[in-house]
Image 1: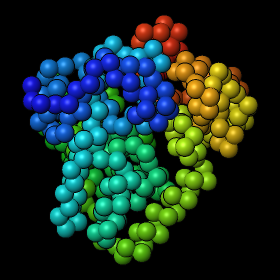
Image 2: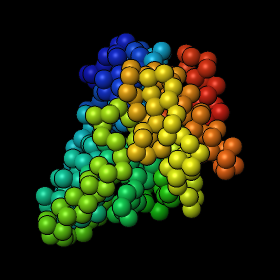
Image 3: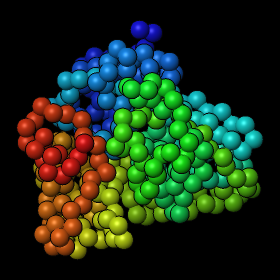
Image 4: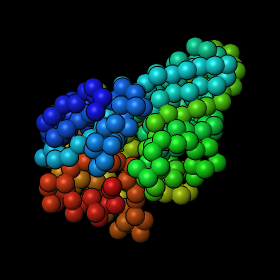
Length: 301
């Protein structure tokens, strides 16, 4: 294998936005597509993550291997075309293209995640989404190796792409952006940041963003608030008092605390409205049987 950085029994807690998680048996940090492919050839069962911003890692740890793509962060800007690797963080990419007078990625300024995850879930905010300006993606699958998909082949819809049901990992994405004045771009980025600050908790309060997806034509936050979720707390975690679709790790909460409070939130909405909310959070673990059961009930992958 190429000389890929690998850490064993690595404490990922400090890397997660929830500030929760036990030791992971092997964590790889590839710095290029070539290194990434080499790791997956050697570790075909490895799970792939960006910067763990929407991932709950079990406090009991994980016995397998994972790949974190934060070192895969190259960006190439040619005219209005932007090619970026999966590991670059959304805010950094947004700022880089803004400096070039390119519009279309302003919504990323408020996202803590990386580009790969944002393409994977077709991230969106304030009337913009990843698929708006995307042209094609470079992908990897165990069956096909490295290949490309055009936008129309990605199956994009609200917070969804075909990557979520097929064995497809995003390695890089290419966008065709619009020329616009730097002042206009900055104004939109300021609007997005101000909206985030007023509607979502700061990452100084450990959280993983929205916990549940909005049901079609509805708001998960509104449903949760009307179901009384703002009063919920379990162990060291609680539902944020300013928006019922966020969980805050305020007192050294555990992964089980998070899953138990998610189950309370899910159950309250199901009982009151007959609606089963779908989580946005990913889970990495498997040692704790109660956690496994809760993930199965909540349909967390």
